[in-house]
Amino acid sequence: MRKYLLSCLFPCLAVMSYTQDTPPVKYKSAVFSETVVQKNISYSDPGIKEKGYLFDLYEPKSDTTMKRPVIIWLHGGGFAFGSKNAGGIELWSETFARRGYVCVALNYPLSKKNALFNFTELKRGCYEAVHSVKEAIAFFKKNYELYRIDTNHIILGGNSAGGMIALQSVYSSQSELAALAQLPGSAILPVTHNPEHIAAVINFWGGLFKLEWLQNARVPIFSAYGNKDRIVPPGYKDTSLYGSFAIHEKATTLHIPNAVKIYDGYSHELQKHFNPLFAPGAATKKRWQDAGQAAADFLYAQLF
Image (cartoon, rainbow, N blue to C red; front, side, top):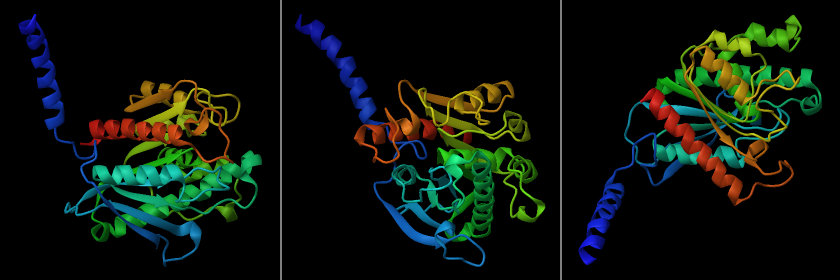
């Protein structure tokens, strides 16, 4: 009996030893124990210090890599609220920086016209936010040496409205988005950058206004969402917004690399019952971390 037990135990110990000795993989798991954060840098030209044009930069401490992938994180809030200090944005910026990424927590100008209750104004708010993201992309391409950024690995990510901005920035053209928002010619903004070299999109419970826009590019998409989400339904329910599952189905038919992670029984922001007035608890933040790890796994498989 003793010999039998030992014969069973040794393989288990060997597996445990192998697991413990397996080194973390850069960009997939945390390889840095600390990060450095620079606050309130302007990405506008010529350096407007207004809140809507500021970002925080997260990077791994003591990292000597000269060209590093960057994730530009975009907060939610229905284009009317929110900032780079949102809990999810800070969490993903911190955890992805520990994996070796440079992370940019980005502010963008918010709508002043009640975008939460007027779908036309919401689309206009998205248009203006996309323009700001393109301005930020141009800034980082210009200053890539200063921030030690690999311009071939610029990733856009965000939650809710931020996920929408990331998707529209890559898959819609300025003219298409302007027409959808019913903007007069005088309100159309000049093009600052066309993000034809964006490496991937991280879409946390966001959506795309038109599925046919997926034909405009072939950029990998990772999505995560709760299947009880009624703010941005995963499919399509006459809201003129296609959710993560609808995007996944269409992207798959177009052979766009993509993956989804579904949280069964959860609503918007991966909360059991979404309420923007209450701060998310520890369990919700754990799901955010889990979604982040799934996104990191996807990015590693696609880009490295």
